[in-house]
Every structure is written in C-alpha cells, then in structure tokens.
Amino acid sequence: MHISEKELYGIDERMMSPLLSPLPSPLLTHEEMMSAISLMTHRMDAIDSSCADAFPLYSPESTDRWVTSSGGSWIGGFWSGCWWLRSRVTGSALDQRKASDICQRLSQKINSDSINRSLIFWYGAAPGDLWFGDANARELAEESIAAIAASYDPEMNCIPLGTGMGGGKEGNQLVTIDTLAPLIQLLNGSEHGIYHQISRCHADTIIAACHTDSGAYHATAYFEQGGFRTAGRAGIWSRGQAWAMLGLSRAAAQWGEPYLAYARSACEYWRRSRPSRANSFPPNRLDDPSGPSDPSSSAIAALAFLSLADLAPDGTQWCIYAHQQVTAIVRSQYFTGFPENSDDKKNRDGTASGIFWGCHYKTSHDKDELVESAWGSLFLMAALCVLIGAIKPNDF
Image (cartoon, rainbow, N blue to C red; front, side, top):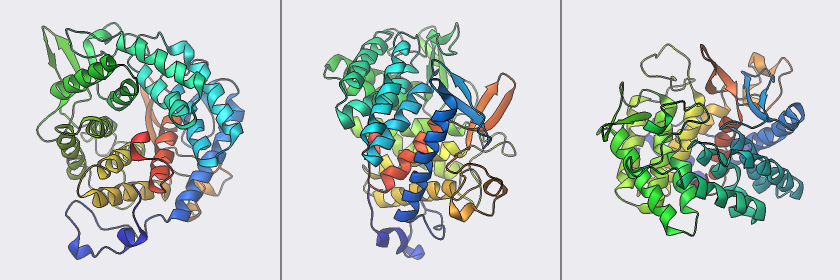
C-alpha cells in the first residue's frame, strides 16, 4: 500500500486514532528505505560466498559465522525467496537465474512429512512462477501443493504439523499457527478447487483451535479424542502472535469476512499487549519481559499490518504503524551499516553492513540466541519493498 509523504508526516497528532503511538521522528524516507534494501541485497553476496552450495541457516548476532545445511531444513525456501525478491528489485537476469538455481535445490523437500513445506515452497518457489513465469519454479510449486494437500487429515479437518523437520512422533496430532499464511497462499495458487477447499478447512480448524476472544492466539494445539486442546496462555510468544496475524490477513485477502474481523482483532491485541516504546522491541515471550527481545516478530507483524491496511477502511493508520515498526528495526542496533546507526560499536569495528540479526532462534536444545537468518532478512526486506511500492502486501 503506497501512501503519500503528506499522509506519513502531515498527520496532526491531536487527530490520531488511539491505534497509533506518537510517530517516530522521522519515519524512514523512500530514499532511506531504498538504501536499507540495497544494504540487504549486497549482504546476500557475502552470505552466498561463505555458504557455497549449502543453505544458510543462521549466524549468531552479527558474527558472520554461518551454520549451513545441505537440505535447508524449513529455512531453505527463504534463501531462495531472498533471491527472487532481489531479482524483483534489481531486474537482473543473473539474480533471477541465481534464484531459480537455489529454488531447484529445494526439490528434495517435496516428500518431507511436514506442513513446513508450505513455508519452503511458498517463499522459495511461488515467487518465481508469479513474478517471472519461471517454468521450473511453477512445476515445483504445483508438486508441493499436491504433496502437502495429500497430508490433509479428514478427522482433524486440517493438515497436521507432520513428523518431519522436528515434528517428532506426535507431529501428526499437532497443528501450528506459523504456516497458516503460506499454506493459504500456496494452495489457493492452484487451479484446482479441491486445494482451495482444503486450505479453507485448514484455516477454519486453526482458528477454532487456537483463537481466543481477546485476539490472542495459541501457537499450537494437540488433537485427541476428537477435539483440540491447547496449553498455556494464548498470545505469549511474540512471533507466534505475529504468524497468526499474517495468516489471518492472508485469509482475509482471500475470503473476506469473518477472517478480516479475526485479523483486525489479532492485530489490535498486538497493539495492546506490545506497545511501542523508543529503542525497544517485543520480548520473545510476554511471560519473560526481562528476557530477550525478538525484533523479527515486528517485521512479520509489519507485513500483517500492511496486508490489513490494504483491506480495512482505516488502512492508512495501519500502514503508518507498519512503517513505524520497520523504521525502528532499521534504525536499531540489530541492523548494521545504516548511517544513523554509525555510533553503534557493531558498525565501527568492521562488521559487514546489511545484517539483520534480530531473529530469536533456538540454536541448540538448551540455548536461544539472537541470530541473522534468511527468514528474518526476507520478511524485513519484503516489508521495505511493500512500503516503497515494489511489491504488493499479499505477495508475501
């Protein structure tokens, strides 16, 4: 959603909706957003050089020490997606060829027993088809749709997590919120109506299982004895709530109401539970406010706000709020090399530019860290691209 400079900067704060916190001073300009995108696209060359033919999984903080994987796990599609998005921005045939080559390396994940295939192939293959008409990407996306839909469980009326990619032995009794957006978009990209029906059944089941009246969402639910049960308080995990918002906004774009009301409610819960403050980001978990933050959840939330902005009557306000989130990330210590961040130590000691290291990630069974990762970089770059009008909100 593109809005004018006057809309961004000329709002009288006395007339602002309670939805919005006071505007940061100033929001990123178009030129600054282009600069941030350029830093991130150039950063991809360095990552590619250090990872060779493997998929980059994560690098702790801004260390540029990558843990890689030959198969990519659930993150591989985001690396391909970064190159498709870069191709969209640069118009380079070489970038497009690179994206296509990485995309084809995802084919080994087609038969993995995991709904995380929707993350892999929506972000990793579908853009090649939709933006560039890449025949190989289209074939891969179509194969993934058929394979994922084949995992539909009629008793659960949805597609379970599955046993692969860490799902474990109980994976076929679990449903998760984080794949809602890519599953809806991937399956509805097919010409076959049966896949559209499966995606809507899945969305309805996820909402019924994970929704609360406050707009907070449980990240997972367990199926037993014909029904779902959840554990703990809904909305606690920041990235889980952001995933829910993104998925609901995609459902709203696809089917309208009542999904638009669900999306708005989830986004409004975010605003109530995670108020914006200067130089702060949502904690990874609300029940651990002194614990680590998760700036990447703000990047995902920003994309949800931008999608909602395209659908809601008060869209300009949601767009501005998304712009605030992105501005906060780019001007923070978690994004290296941006001119305004030059007084930060990490930008004075030779650290590479364009690193977004604000992704909270479990790097081992007993250790969580803030890392640089392809999925965090893709969502931040995508939000920037929406704000400058290079892509549409529902492209991602």
